[in-house]
Length: 204
Length: 346
Picture 1 (cartoon, rainbow over the protein chains, first blue to last red):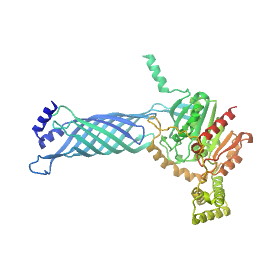
Picture 2 (picture 1 turned 180 degrees about the vertical axis):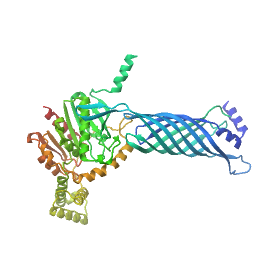
Picture 3 (picture 1 turned 30 degrees about the vertical axis):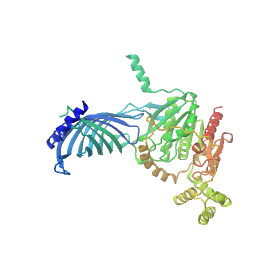
């Protein structure tokens, strides 16, 4: 069955530029895991990627008899929400989005730039005490800390190119974030994200 | 449903008992959130509060050396403001010695309110001795503690610089008498002898001058280390990391850059020689004997200056250690801590 399936796929031939455009024009589901500050902080984000602009270019053919190869340049809007937490310190709810400028080569390698903003609502996880003197030691209230998180990063990924429509991509994104106002002022620090996207709906 | 809610509330409040306690608090004082990690035997009725070195160091590293004490006592590792995993929004003017002393006061008050120990002991290492000294000379703070253990740290900038001057003289004399123990060429030996001669002629300024302080520091730390052998030491390092640890490499790096410069500048004029005469807390000076940073003469000066009665103070030398005997001579160090605590408690 697998042999038959592969034979049918080969017989269909490589996709045309229009077919590649159709594949990438569709929204994709997105899931990310991220960490920051070389700390125990971890977070997850789920959402969708919506292509805003798409350019499909023909790559130079090695031989005229060879089929055309296509690279894809896109500007995509990612909308997401999620949760992050650092044990004994803080938990956060995040909602926001980012813009992605990305190139996918004909071999499926992806390079991009991401920049985004999230609204963050944090809660202190560790117990906080105020101690004005030995007779006045009290728990501080579990404070909700609203804030803003600005993040940018470089993206490298792999688009698992399939004849029946590129269903899955995975990206590694080292970056930097600025977040505040926090109890620590505006915090700037490194981030690292692993992101995967997959095409919503069926294959072509 | 009620039982479930009650259970959740109990978990949320955190346990305050046990022999294997492990809890992180944040003590909020004057804009700083001070990470305070309480570990070990809280049922013992004894709390040992450890003030780290620096300025700008961090407390969690001491877990690796002091964890054997946690079977016997509750050990509290706390990060000073702008250090380690501590957080907060405060102006740069808050980096001063009285503030650091009051921060320790807030930590002591919090720990005593939460855990209600019978006895509270303080340990300070390097800059942590300065913090502990500042705490002890403020108000009636010394009445809150049962004992004080300074480890290779000072109570004033002047005896510190004087100790380094004397250390340069004595070390170069020793190097000169035992040249085979050191890999020195003639030029290097001549340079050291020049340093020794200049140190013999120098007079430590009082009040301190920054140029002199920096010169003694640079030269003392440039001397070849005393080559003791430590083959019999029994090291058993603990782990301070892990996912649920409060330690953060990035936060530690960021904080280190914040606090070192202002506190180092403040150190030039920091002097508690008169104030420590009013301190009468039982004290054990735990000292690495070959330390160029805080030479043994600092321990002797602090011993003479503190107001503690003779019968209640002592200096314990660690002959196989430099600046950090808890690390360099771990087992004897922890044994000395236990001995002191138990003697005071009797």
